Image (tube, rainbow, N blue to C red):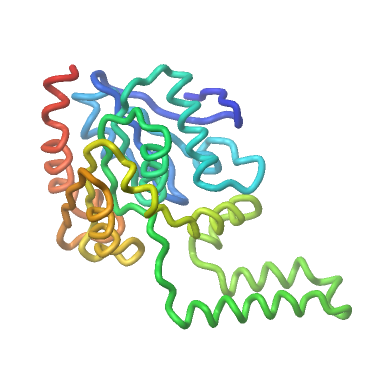
Amino acid sequence: MYIELEYGKLNYEKSGSGPPVILLHGWGANIGAMSPIQRGLEGDFTVYSLDLPGFGDSEEPPEQWGIADYCDVLRDFIDKLSIENPILIGHSFGGRMSIYYTATYGGVHKVILVDSAGIKPKRKFSYHVKVSTYKAAKKMLKLPGLKHREEELLQKLKGKFGSADYKGTSGIMQQTMVKVVNEDLQHLMPDMKCPVLLIFGEQDTATPVSDGKRMEELIPDAGLVVLNQAGHYAYLDQPQQFQAVIHSFLEKDKRSRT
């Protein structure tokens, strides 16, 4: 179903009954990616799963956005539907949103961060070489002899040097991705004033367990669970373990808030 928000039209699904849970997917994904979590919770909770702006069936942002802009949309969604004290469950980029929203706006009952982004990665030397090469090549496109082919050649450069996620988007969403992945949220983590469960895959290379350990140090009321033989999609790699962990974390809410 759709809801008209200040930014535009946002697609979401709602199922179940009980205390409210909001699911926020990762970059490049959509509602479908979170459906296993939704099905596992809808028996005890009212679950809202969002297609974030620019993904699934939701409209794209009108311009380059940062994490604050995405959280403004989440706040608008929560206000429009009169959702009180939701539980936020965010995977990867959705975790980044959950951190910013909780620390900035509050009014969140609990947070579950799954293979969450939010800590700016330390870049290897090879990365800096690649970026420098890209920037130098981009400057060369300004030369008089190449000016008429600038757009064509720029797309080829992006294809050669861009990440898989970057290549999978275009235009405004590429610009937005560049902005959000460079936002480090460590300074906000001490301001998360609610219980936080961190779940990371042991083999996650996109958001490694070391990020989870750092978040556990910075967030006042946080606990980390590492799932063995799981990668960046820990909730898909180890679904039974994942469901057991989150249901244990939310057990008291089923009793006291329903």
